[in-house]
Amino acid sequence: MKGQSLEDRGETFFLNLRFMLIVTVFVGNAIEPITPEMGGLHSLYLWIFSFHMPLFVLVTGYFAKNSLTGAAGRKLLLQISMQYLIFQSLYSLLDATVFRVGGIHHSFFAPYLLLWFLASHAMWRLLLLGMRRWKAPCQLAFAAAAGIAVGYLPVDGIWFSISRTFVYLPFFIIGYHLSFAAVARLFVPGVKIAAALFSAVLLAILSTGAAGNIPAGWLYGSMTYTQLGAEHWYAGLYRLALYGLQLASSLAFLGLVPLREGRMTSLGRRTLYVFLLHGLIVRFAAASGIYSYLSNPAGAVLVPAAAVLLTLLLAQPFVKSALHPLVEPGIEPVLSLHRMLHRPLHRLLRRPASKPAANDQ
Image 1 (cartoon, rainbow, N blue to C red):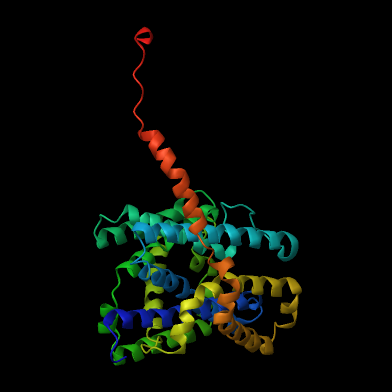
Image 2 (tube, helix red, strand yellow):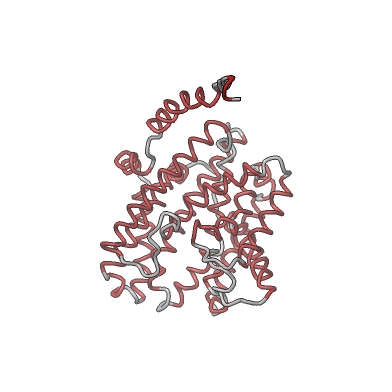
C-alpha cells in the first residue's frame, strides 16, 4: 500500500469489501432453497444475512460521495432507473414463462426479488438529497426512526420497496459519511484479528442451535411487524435490537477484509454484473429441479462452491464486455432527447403572456 493516497487506499478497501459481499450474496441466495433441510446451511444463511445487506448498502453509500449531486448524480439516477426497467421486465417475463416463483407481484411498483436494491438505491439518493442541509447526526437519527416506524405501516413492504428503503437507510447514510481514515484508525492489526474472531464466533453460535431463535424474516427488512407476527406496540424495539446485531456483525466482518490492492480489488469493480445476473442463474437452477438432488451433505459443499466459482466467472472482464449494453445501458440518447425537448419547452414557459385586448377587459 506504499505510494497510495488515503483516498486510493479507501477505494481499495471498499472494492475488496464489495467483492467479498457479492460472494456472500450469491452464496446466500444459492443455498436458500436447501436451508430448510440442512441445519448447517441455515446457520450459514443467517450469518450471511446478519451483515451482507447492511454492508452492501453501506458500501453503496460510501461510493455515492462523488455522484450524489450535479450532473453525475442525475446521470446515475437515470441509469439506475433504466437498469430497473430492463431487469424488472426481463425477470418478470422469465418468471411468467419459466421460473414461476410463488407470491410474485408482476408490477413495476413491486421490485422482483433482488431488484429491490435498485429501487431502494434510487430512493436513498433522493432522500439524502432532501436531507443534505441537515447535519449527519440528524440524518442518521431520522433514518433510524424511519426504519423503526416503517414496520408499523399497514401496507405490504414490497410495494415501491418502501420497507427495505427505510430499514436500510441508516446504513446508506453511515456509508456516505464514513471516511477511510476512521476505518484505518479503528482496524489496526490487533482489532482486525479480534473482529474476525468475533465474526467466526457469531457463526459458531448460530451453528449451535441459536439460529432457530432468529426468524429470518427479521433479517430481510421487507416485512411489517404484523407480517412478522409481532403485533404489539413495542415491536419497534426488536428492530432497534436487530440494528445493534447487524452493526456488530458488520463491523466484525470488516475485520476479514484485506487492505492491500490485489486481484480482488479488480473483481470488486464489476460486482454489478454479478448482482444483476446471478439471480437468473439461481432461478434457472430452482426451476430445473436440480435442488431436489442437492439436499444432502454433498450438496451442502457443492452449492456454495459453485456460487463462489460463478461469482468469479460473472466478475470477469469478458462478461462486462459482452453484456455492458444490458447491465450498464447508455443514457446519452435519453439525455440528448431531454435536452432537445427541454429547450423549446423552457422558452415556451418563459414567454411573457400577451396583453389582453381592450374589448376583453
